[in-house]
Every structure is written in C-alpha cells, then in structure tokens.
Amino acid sequence: MTTILDKKNDPQSYLDDSDPELDEDAKTILTQYSGVPEAELVSHVRAVRDKAFKLFPYPCIGLYYFMGLTIGKSPQYPDVLRRVKNGDTLLDLGCCFAQDLRRLVFDGAPAENLTGTELEKGFLDIGYELFKDKEKFHASLIAGDFFEPISGLAEHSFDIVHAASFFHLFSWDEQVETVSTALRLLKPKRGSMLFGRQTGVEEASVLKHPATRSGEMYRHSPESWKVLLVQVTQKLGIDADYEVVGYEGGKQRTANAYSLMRFTVVLK
Ligand SMILES: C[S@@+](CC[C@H](N)C(=O)[O-])C[C@H]1O[C@@H](n2cnc3c(N)ncnc32)[C@H](O)[C@@H]1O
Image 1 (cartoon, rainbow, N blue to C red):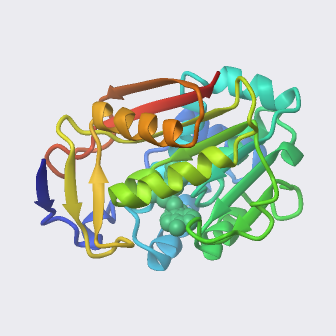
Image 2: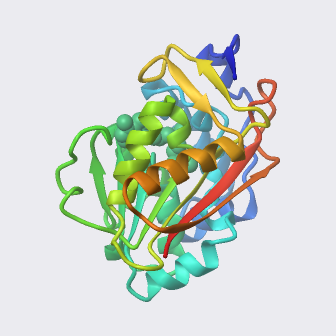
C-alpha cells in the first residue's frame, strides 16, 4: 500500500484552458433537448463550467467530463434504460448537474422514476441552466450530504442506484459507509443493482488531498474495490453477484490516476 501526496492537487491545474470538445451525444442533447443553437454550444458549456468550477473545483467539472453523459456509454445502459422505461426507479448519487438523468430522460425514461442526490444545491441549480429545462425537467433532485439522513431519500428504496466518480472521493472507511448506505437504499429483491464508474488504478493507494472530507481518498484497483464491495455486502447479509472491470480513459493528469473502472453489484 502506498500513500501518494498528489503534487497536482492544486485545483487550478484541473481548469482546462481550452474550449470543450463536445461529442455527438453532448451536441445532440444540448441542441435537440435544450435548444442551444449550434453556434453557441461551446460558449454555453464553457460559461456554465466556469460558474460551477467557482462553486467547487472538481476535476470532472474543470475538465468538462460532465458533458460525457457517461451513464449512456456504460455497457449496462441499454438494460438500465429499458428497466426504467418499464417502471424501475433509479437513484443517481452525487449527481452534480444531473446530466446523467437528463440523458435518461432524453432517451425516453419517465422523469418520475428518477431521483438525483447532490451535496451542492448550486450544482443542481446550474444543471437547469446547462440544460435550459427548469420548466420541463421533473426528476426529483434532492440536495443533501450523503453521510447524513437526507430528507426525502431515506424513506425511499430504488431498483437501481448509480454512482459515477462518487465513492472514490472518500477514504476507505467513508467508502464503506457510503456503499452501505447505497446498498440499503436498494429494494431487497433479486435484480436490484448498484452500478457506476470511478477512478481505478493498477495499484491501490491512499491519496492525501486537503480538499476532501477527511483529507484522503482511497484510490482503488479493481481488485481492492471488489474486496470492499464484497465485505460491505456480506456484512449487510446481502447475497450478490459482482463485476469490476478496469479500463483506460480520461485525461492523464497524474501518474497512475486516470484510468477508470466500472462496477456492478446485482442482488441475487
Ligand atoms: C466528482 S463529481 C461527479 C459528478 C457526476 N456523478 C459525474 O459523473 O460527473 C462528485 C459529485 O459528488 C458530490 N458529493 C461530494 N460529496 C458528497 C456528499 N457527501 N453527499 C452528496 N454528494 C456529494 C459533489 O458535490 C459532486 O457533484
């Protein structure tokens, strides 16, 4: 186990100086769903990004990752979309601008089956600016700290919980706590699923980072993340199938840091 003091944890190093490179998914949703004129796409996204980065300088904001609408690029997406269209409920943890929920709605998922939860209410508000949909986006967005009981959340349970770039923000113990809470929010039935994507490195390490909740983030390898998932589910008495897959992706900002992994925990 290594402990890394990330010399690049100066937040400004994550503010991309250039304009966003929007892929077809991003362009399509912003033009067809939000009505942003093609010629204004880049300036619109950049202006919203700048405003949000001042609120909290997450790399995924500074580097425009939020426009990746990554839920739609996961292998589980066709099945998730089909399930939500057929009535399953989905919760997105640390949803930021709720961009992944917009992707689902754009693809035909009923908004009433969708909930997002987010620490920074300002990000939820900026989401309406980004997608220009204050009047028409009716998913339930709840501001609150996932480490505390969140009013409007604890009394619900969900068929699917999604978490992208969320658990990796925390220390090992905090991840145990947040994964436990996420699993307890699942309906206790066969097929309920926790899935998502986050940083995945070759060798697990603790990253000291002053801007995090406890001053450190536990950066998992696919193997160590599976160990944590198995430990937590077993402690909760949950029988599940697990899949954790590492893959290349993201921009290489720090050594051994911007590879990714996706994961699913499916209740048996
Ligand atoms: C790195 S961003 C990822 C956002 C989005 N899921 C994505 O894939 O782009 C992590 C998000 O989690 C939120 N967050 C951090 N700590 C949280 C907490 N304790 N409770 C709820 N949300 C939290 C942050 O405000 C931020 O929007």
